[in-house]
Image (cartoon, rainbow, N blue to C red):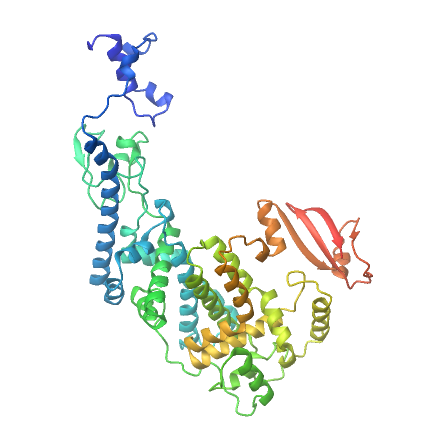
Amino acid sequence: VSPNGKMFLAKRVGDFPQTLGATQVESFIDEDIKNIPAVELPQDLFAESPLADPVIMLHSVVLPQLLYQLECYLTVISFIEHCSYNFPILGNCLCELSVDSVMESLTAKSCCMDVTYDRLEWLGDAVLKLLHTDSLLKWEYTSYLHEGYLTMIRSVMGSNDRLKDIAKAAGFDEFILLKSLNRAEWRPFGLAVSNPTTGKAEIQPVHARVDEYCSEDPLGTDDNVRRTEPSNKVCADVIEALIGLVFIEFGYEQCMKVAYEIGVSLQAGNVDNVCRKWSDISPDPNLVSFACDFVGVKKLLNQHLLVEATTHQSCLHKPVPSYQRLEWVGDAVLCLAAREWLFRRAEKLPVSKLVVLETTLVCNESLAYIGFTKGVHRFIDHRNMALPGRFQSYQLDLEIGRGLWSTDPPKVIPDVVEALIGAVHVDSGLHNGQKAALCVIEPLLQSLSHLLTNEFNNLTGLLHPKQNLYEMTGGIVSVRVYKEDVFRRLGFPSPLWNFGSRSSGGVGYVGVVRCKQILLAAAME
């Protein structure tokens, strides 16, 4: 085609990348071809030419995939070497694992791969929570603090901002796999790219964190391919995924060493007696027998922990602290026990479904039902005049068959259940604490085991009805249940639908449905 012909000019315009918009293409067209009329091109110009060698076609399809997988593999190998040099304990652990296992902990969701770090991060979050709990409980500067202060410190220690700083300080952010295999995001390192500033072909450095050629120019070369920095959330997730990987492969003790080595957790303290002993207050033998049977242990070395685990904060006359600190410990223990059980038995379920199952296992309604049916409330030492009435009301709700999700259990029952689990953990360590947690929720685990064995995928039946409605409506509709007297006192407008024969008198329950805080309906059973 002659350079001066219309066909050459038309082909020149058609050579622009497809990712450029019409307005962007217009800025590249010279003045001499802006007003060129439409050109009718011959049909043969658009005919596809068959490749002379099928092998070339095969290589053109497979080679990018091979290069992409090779790059991911070499990145993981470099990460293991980096950890071996800078963090020997973590490096030794990773050297014993397969490259695929380590790659899973470094693969972000943006890679669009079948396996990402989501499940390991979900498990590592619970491991890190218990690591921080143990370190704060045994550290001499925090062991005496109230549960509220301990919760605040633990939240700060496990925050994304802090974990992000740790990941970047350790250099982990350089090895996170972010790009998916597509032309818009990835190209092999070492590929010559035209620099729009100098007009020369230059090779991108292998460890370039941001493409210098595409810093501010949205029309950068090679379809704006660049290596972006991982977000703060991704950096924090990788730390938790590594903690989860070490825990699932090497156990909790090794996980403690790795966490301290990379600066995630505090060094284990020397405070052995984390809870006071009261020589003048001996636990009731019936309480000891019941508690050991409830949590599935033969005996406790420090039985005075049971006194603390069953003491309500209203007992101001006793020199015994309330169950709140042990409940704080038991919450972390139960969280890890439930997540590890689900992680090992539901290998194919995504995190979104695992969260639903975990919520079913550890929510207040489940723990209250288990604790109340086994008689935990009979051993709670309190001076709260309202609790006996709450216990009777909850028992009535269970007897009339309101169902697990339709009850309003006293929060003290699940709190004491978690405190008893925490007492076992403090007394006998992680192994017995995990066994105690699984023993408490064993009835629920049996039901879930049956569902998981039958390839159960529909989790609607396990969702709390309020949560189910919330997800169905995209989060704009919420449901809350009030006691009838509270509903009247808050001054909600009528009408109030009554669907039952139960008299009012302030003893019924009212369900209130709101859309963006606007009252839609109110119904009483």
